[in-house]
Image 1: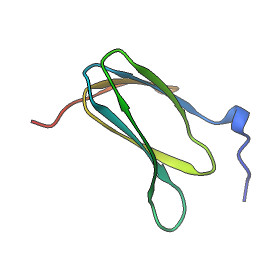
Image 2: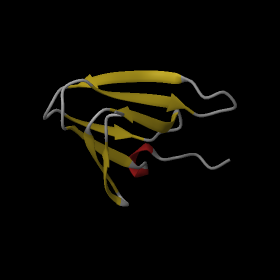
Image 3: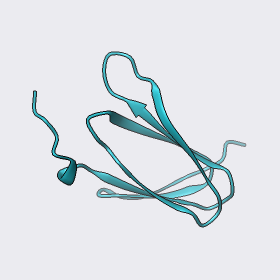
Image 4: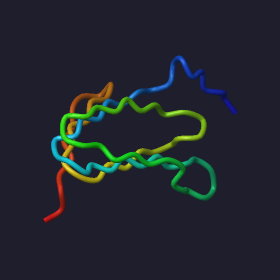
Amino acid sequence: MEKRNPQNSEYVVIKAEDDGVSVIGLTRGSDTRFHHSEKLDKGEVLIAQFTEHTSAIKIRGNAKILTQFGEVESELRK
């Protein structure tokens, strides 16, 4: 199995557009589990990194997400 070099891991920039945006890190492996969570208020920015422990990041709320693939916006469910 190829070992990831932390310096070359992918980063994601998350900017909260409203108060109360949740950012949740999910583990890799046979069982996906929550391993970290953050709450962001409007204007706050979080720079997250995919690592050997983090395989997915879930974002709930209005936020702007910047990745190496481009920009995406999340929305609140109505």
